Image 1 (cartoon, rainbow over the protein chains, first blue to last red):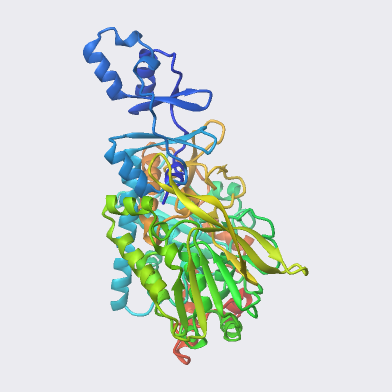
Image 2 (spheres, rainbow over the protein chains, first blue to last red):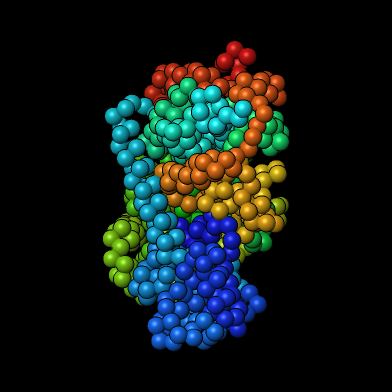
Length: 148
Length: 466
């Protein structure tokens, strides 16, 4: 299983913001889409990621944080995934490096989606659940006679 | 007076397109909701249900087919109906279904294979592995296919379960195959097979191979085929070793151990040889001058870590040539667009959000249209993986029912049945299928086989007295 299998059942690519926009605008976007992070893009290339944590950290120190720009607060050193990356490796990296949101880019560096740690955990859970279910069915089948 | 949908007076009417495992899982989850009275019609273009469980799962893996007992339980619900031999977009259209159902669910799977995209791919003797699979499993649309099994050397590209099934069937003896429900004509052709050497080609290393440990162990236990691998190809590179150690992934360690064992195993003089290759990609198929495959040019790959730590192959400048007269490719699968249903070209699936089909321009859900299984998320996982996937879609269906976001079909169940029968008088019901099943199993008994399959629609209808 890879990242593409997660993106395939997500309707939108990702919610993006421009670096020069204000944190006020960014907060409105987070609220409207009920999400935890925005990808800052120039054209269709990710240049940063702004998470609710980045905003909380700034708000604790600076009461006028709403007027600052996305570029001021975003993380610039963004780790990106590619659609064919194995989910197992992705899950490991996200857990180890405490990444909650992973922008996904194509081979040309263009943004094609985003996966959250929640997406990855759900996909893995469904994968294991499916395997357990299939194995159980084969074991039970042994007792209930020939297959169709 | 308006009636609430999902009550005995006005049952929720659901049409499911595609009677593979996912179609049954969707039906099952719909019926499991005790608050909603639902009628489910399962429509398939083939007369027989179970999709790839009947026509994809290998004939020598009968245990996997036990899952159909669960499907039969779903079908026993009095509010369930099966319309086999009815094609969506031809016999019944989306417009027809909108007139007769509150909700429509597309579960049509991944029906086409990805191409390798290399020169010579269309030479005679180069085939999608799925065509071979459908052929040996008796799929009515593929029984006419021809594979040149007079060739002695065969390459199978890919290391997923389809590729592994294909090499196993090619390496089995006629006696081994005769104990299965493989199609009779395929058994006959394979009986005269002259295949001596089969190559299974993986583009990445042994630690990244998609096959499971039971699958690879089975390849080492074939009655009349020796298995081997190249010692330097089954040793882990530094990146793979680090990844395996980091993740404490015992299954992968075991896999590598098994493969190392194969590389050390001496040949025992069996009639066929199965060679596992890693870190190679075909770059060209070369012809014999008469339009037939004669050789495959391969490039050696090395692995690199992407920024998420996933290991990907990269071509080196080392090439080699493999003399092969038959090639099966199994390098990925894609869904096929359905008439009138939005498609997501990027991922080869129906455009959806958690199973709700989306309008391509507004990206908002289309009322009453859903999808589940491989046509929703792409071809991945085992049969059971489609169960949680179907559950997610059905959850969306009930959320939408709750707020009244369903189609409002003027017609009743009886009208739907009348329409489908009028459009396709030769349709096969579940009761018909159970009869066919009984006949197939009876025919198999004399030869101590699980069943002897009907492989022509005409034969099936004749057996039903039509």
